[in-house]
Length: 182
Image (cartoon, rainbow, N blue to C red; front, top):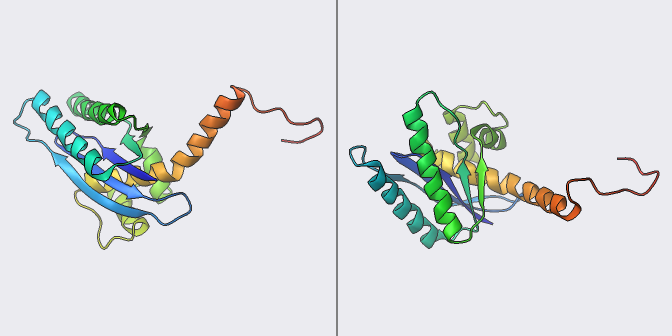
């Protein structure tokens, strides 16, 4: 599976592409950042982000897109820009019919480091180790995008099977023969 990870941001939108499958070695395909100038209007910045993401989708042809779920911050202006960039990434994927998964920052940290409270340096170090890179990707937004893709590959398969089981059996657990223990 090839996944495009997006760490949304209005100034720096981290983007990373990872190939792999659960239980198999993962491989970084590409990593980078779409940057927008702070002096531009928000609408122009969003267009630049859209153009950058579209170019990555054209070049790397992912099968899924993993985006960091926006969480509440004290700085409303920052969270608004992040949410807007996140929406652009989801829109670009939806236009192409690609599945989009939202992962929380703590979910991503837990997936790659084992701790949902890991700091940026720990995430960068583990992304470097998992993808067998020579050095942590810079800036941290790029490493976070790769971490999102890794998280999705490792957790997405299980979440997909769970969703399929729920869809097949409704909201209840499948019935077991009498005398069988759960």
